[in-house]
Amino acid sequence: MALASAVHPLPPSPFKSLRQHPHLVLSSTPLKPPTRRPPTSILAFHKPTHPKPQPLHPLRPRPRLIRHRISAKSADPDSQNASSGLQNVVGVLHLVVSLGLVLAADKFLKSAFVAASIKFPSALFGMFCVFSVLMALDAVAPPAAAGLMGFFEPATLFIQRWLPLFYVPSLVVLPLAVKDIPAASGLKICFILVVGWLASLSVAGFTAITVRKIVKTEMVDAEPMKKPSPFSAVEFWIWTAVFISSFVVAYLYPTALGTSARTCLPFLLAATVLGYMVGSGLPSDVKKVFHPIICCFLSADVAAFAFGYFSRSGLDAVLGDYLTKTSTNPGAGDVLMGFLGSVIISFAFSMFKQRKLVKRHAAEIFTSVVIAAVFSLYSTAIMGRVIGLEPSLTISILPRCITVALALSIVSFFEGANSSLTAAVVVLTGLVGANFVQAALDKFRLTDPIARGIATASSAHGLGTAALSAKEPEALPFCAIAYALTGIFGSLICSVPAVRRSLLLIIG
Image (tube, rainbow, N blue to C red):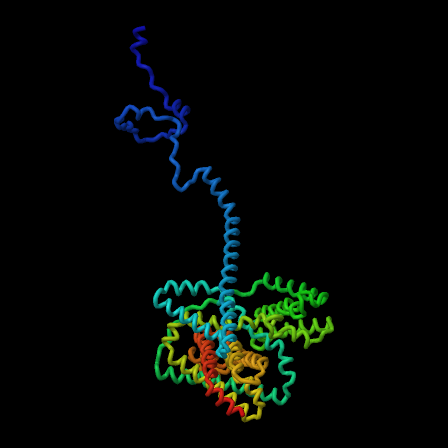
């Protein structure tokens, strides 16, 4: 026992530890004993074996929050659709109210001027009133002026979008207007129309260039002008459905709405609108020779011819229902031409928006517009006298370069004028300008945007303005200003009795 206790036990075999712990690796370098830091507390030796719960990351939502957000996202499209639908309804109501106020003001002024036996254009007086109010508000309370402009913006955009359509009725009933005019007189009118347009274009353009060289005013950027929205497929199919259904009703029940004019109004109006939509969607190369207004009045005439053929009433009867010129029994053309007064009143908003531009280039604009308006009136009277056109026809085409609404007011100053011929000649002048204005300006080497805009609007009014501004946006503000001012100054000049007497003296 003593011997056994005196013998030291043998050290454990290293191969046995390797078999028990195969992850250990042998090394020739002697191992150093591990150094341990003294524990700061007793708890350091008793760490839990299970992992500690980690705090939630601020960017990682909890599962409940994720489910809540998913459900909220799934409900977003419905809420967006509801909000967009509400905005559309509010937008339509805004348009109805603003446009209704403009139309009501025009109707009120017209009736008041008729009752007072005032021959001055009532819409022009309304335009001056609106412009004066805007200028007064801008001087006293600019936010109020901006708010008034914003309130009537839907109405002005609506008028701008459908402006060419308001000129169409005079072309639709052109077969009735020229029915009693001899062919020789018709050729003379066409000669005055084309030559007079070129002369007015050159006079306005070169006057603007001359004044610009004198004043040497640098051109600045104009206020941006909103463009109306294009026509949608939904609008096209709605008007198509209106045309088909109302055409069938008018054929089966010719006096379903009391009179033939009222019964034919829906499908004739739809045919006119559809023609304008189709013409507006044509390629630009086609529009150069086939203006949307041409497509528009051809569409209305084809619909009138078709209804006259199937109902055996004839084309003349249907065209007579298209434009009756009576407020108690209106046709489709009467509805469209009823917006012409509101077009004049809307000039106040466009002029106010570009008031800084008008002030800066007042010398070029006012000088060119006044000279162009006077030249247009007197050159027409002189050419009519020289080529031997009948005095009544010469009077009817005097305001050939002035927009339809004010041209009709101008010829009302004279006796014996054919207002239907006046409107037709004005629209035809605009069509000539719309198709050839760029080529003519380039031929005359009028490259200045101010001169190009003023010359176009002073010679071809709204249709020429629309054609040029679509390709040369920098000329649009000057087109819009000259378009309004040419009609204004033309009306003011013809309202002077001495001017009317001098024109009649030249005509003979």
